[in-house]
Length: 199
Image (tube, rainbow, N blue to C red; front, side, top):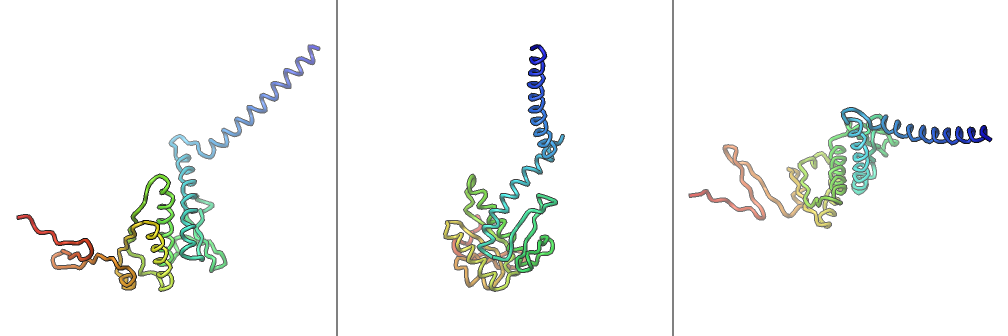
């Protein structure tokens, strides 16, 4: 009977040891993923998760602009962006070898995705786009402008800074900046008025 009690005690201790080893392995795995003395591993881990969420929002916007591209995270580096090109047999492309027009579309989708991502905590009601439209062909330019128009109907103010003539025909509310002499400029448009110098 004493022997049986000892066997029961040993069995209970072995079960406890097994549970402790499982718990220890879990924490060891977590430490290997995000543990570091300077917090770098944890920061990269959290940034990777945030970047993954941003890519999901950006892809939702990108699908409205073009069915050609899909954004993904690099397997080797979770903070690096790759582009799947469905017109080239789903080739995974680096952002380094995108054309100017492709770069503009990807950047636009990321900006729109970031705006959607932040909308839960921050109201992003104004978006300014500086150039890039000159790199788009006529069809893609039309699609991009339609996407921006749909955002305007959602109550967002979209500001476009550009020299592209086709945009002047599509955008009715404009502020024109014309260069003058000596590095000065003249501003004309809705809401603009000349400021009189103080006496």
